[in-house]
View 1 (tube, chains in turn yellow, brown):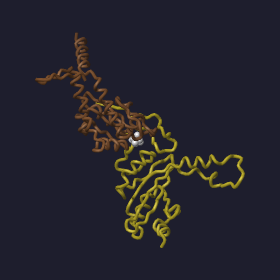
View 2 (cartoon, rainbow over the protein chains, first blue to last red; view 1 turned 30 degrees about the vertical axis):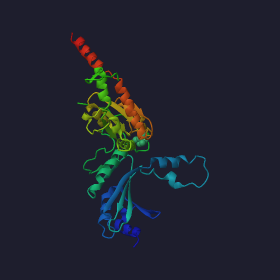
View 3 (cartoon, protein in one colour; view 1 turned 45 degrees about the horizontal axis):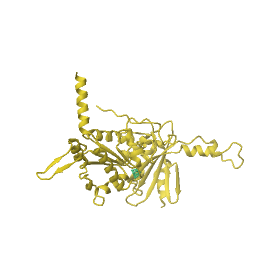
View 4 (cartoon, rainbow over the protein chains, first blue to last red; view 1 turned 90 degrees about the horizontal axis):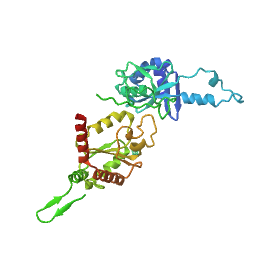
Length: 183
Length: 171
Ligand code: SF4
């Protein structure tokens, strides 16, 4: 059986979208069922995605901004209703890269996260390895992971006020300096 | 250094300040603080090929208490600032600082939210070495510049000035 069909069989309705790009498979699952979906992928005897090789965040805001900006008001041509009429898509993604050590197959699992509710369940109960990457995503994007044992900043210092990998954060920063406090 | 040797019974006449400066100048124990690519060049300068020991920088010290030249080689992020400052503060006086590389001098190419734009925002610097990275010769040159600076120092005068100030304040 094709990997695509196996995943469809394993996840059932949890697989919101499956697409393949140059031989790499990615599957989108609803944010509310992320733990369920990942555990199924891990425990399925045929798939056995037992290794979390990476976990990271994506901020899509610039892509969407460009899409709307490139469409001038008086523009003729084929109207693509999907771009105008659809509600604005969730701003962030959290992406899980899975690997099956048995079959050496890889899968990308994506959960979409809205800007006004940047919370998702932590997968540290499935893979301990998620602890630091989840802290990094929290640090850089401000996405909170419910159930994480120790959700602190990882790369920036504790008092840092912003989330630097958000696309609306200027590269040069907003003048944050570290104040030195000595006892 | 004003030094005169009398032949015969082995007398050397010199000024005490010159003697102190001479001693300090000939043993600048470096504290290698390498944080990025520049650190590799610093290692190269310390290793046998360039052999910084020729200048008395004999013993790279990994304890700030036993070093007097801090060689800051590499990018300093703002998160690292308190550590750098603490290491500098822990070094005993007198101490000198070499900022090695564009990153240490000015933040270099990293004009970003996380990189300190020059270590002189936090600690005083004696010699800046430009380059990305500077060659080991650059670091050796900087070391010689530090030596020249030590040579011109007036360690005793400073002491006496402080003493005098202390007396004046007490009176
Ligand atoms: S100055 Fe250049 S070589 Fe040195 S640490 Fe910075 S980037 Fe690396």
